[in-house]
View 1 (cartoon, rainbow, N blue to C red):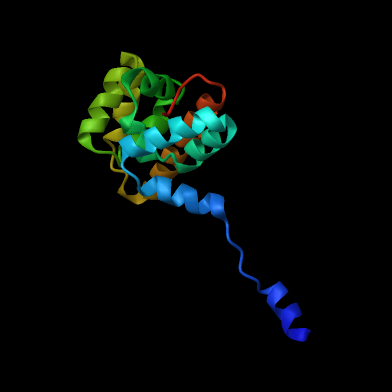
View 2 (view 1 turned 45 degrees about the horizontal axis):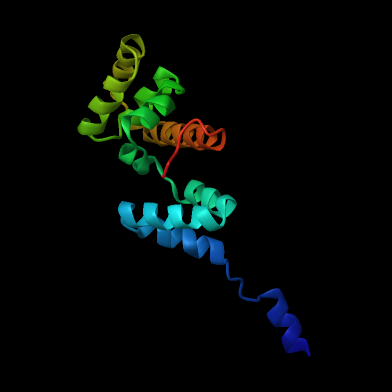
Length: 145
């Protein structure tokens, strides 16, 4: 009986939802989209939750221009500049081309500074953009899949 009590305290916890999220994160984008769309037909709430949980900053760049521009326009230029400093040149150009000229110039000014000592702040800026994207998705302003 004392063994059962010990097992209850140190029992194994299986989080099936987290395992699915991990699988979705490693799937090819096309397969992931197909799976989430099929799931949406059966359980829209679960599909929405899973798509939010498996979405990452890198996934932003797979969005179409319309959805990506809505996310970028909802982001302050300083935050965008910090986040873009760690992003590929191709995606930097795409992002700056999707927002207004004034905001693009402000973001570019921040992005081109020496931010090597502020890497953590740049990653936090990416997280902030991701949070904004998820919030816009919840309000049905943008669609991930």
